[in-house]
Length: 469
Image (cartoon, rainbow, N blue to C red; front, side, top):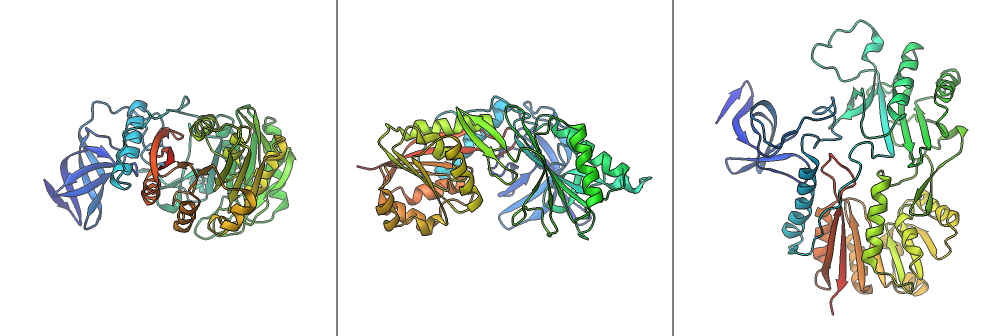
């Protein structure tokens, strides 16, 4: 049943039946798919339609008629506003079920691949405080809740937290975030309170003025802590006040940086953070390997599960010590370095030059001499000449961005025809599409989903492809 509420349509007694790959729950209304956030299968709800498309609708809940039997209470007070942990209302075993289902559905629907050799998803031992990096945004016009329209002090409108989903200019103030170990919350709160007390202005995301923009906090398994204070402009007095305060209050900080970012976005691309105090980097230890992490380094944000993921890639590779391994989209070289001690040679290719420099440094740090990393576009570097110079690969590891493998790279791989391909992906949909393009020459041998991000819809998936005989 539906009725109009002014200009918006209200749909009543809608039963939620499934969860989509994007994390929103699904219902069906008049042969259309209806996407609803923050509900779970089994909920019966009234919703207001927020978006109409010829193939689907989007809506948000205005009333619960019946709550699902397996719905649980979210542990975070920001659930429903924050876009970070959308599945807190699902028991963890149900989260794993839907992540596994996501992989199977994408492979069968997009890749036309019958999945009958999938291992059970590997869950995360830690389901809170598992991240090693968080970035908090500071704003002078935070998201206001009902009843907060008139506040006594101008600084009451200031906040430090995360962006509202799909709203670049709206940031809600975080009380406690359960994604990272302390002193993460303590540092964020201390910077915010100190700046309020000293009237050091937070950034205005629309007017592009103010001073304090972001605080980035990274940590390691052995509790090293890096903090980067991102500021909008030069002001030596404010800068020194903030940095000396944080340095004195948190002696556990092992690397304290600041960065001046006058750009219209929060990215540190093209900006060099400046070391204020401590070591210039963190060292993360994984499986006996050391990885140097600087302020701008890319590194898997769940260190413990990264070990699980990389060991599974090593297992799927089936190395004997005689193989040449190509690591495409190699990032900071973590997978390639994991494999290097059981391979004859590892060749990594990565577009981001800073990541390649990190990979080379990490190879030196670990005294690995059989891994070489090249900077550039994979589709341009991976050529017949390159292969003649570096040897034909026995195994290719592929870990591309969410968009998947470039079509020209797939075409080159199909000319090389290595005996094995291990494809690691954070997007099973594009992974299934790419594998379908290689299906004339390769069989899917093994599939292993790994949960890197509890309470989110995201899933990492490893697939072993074997060359057909």
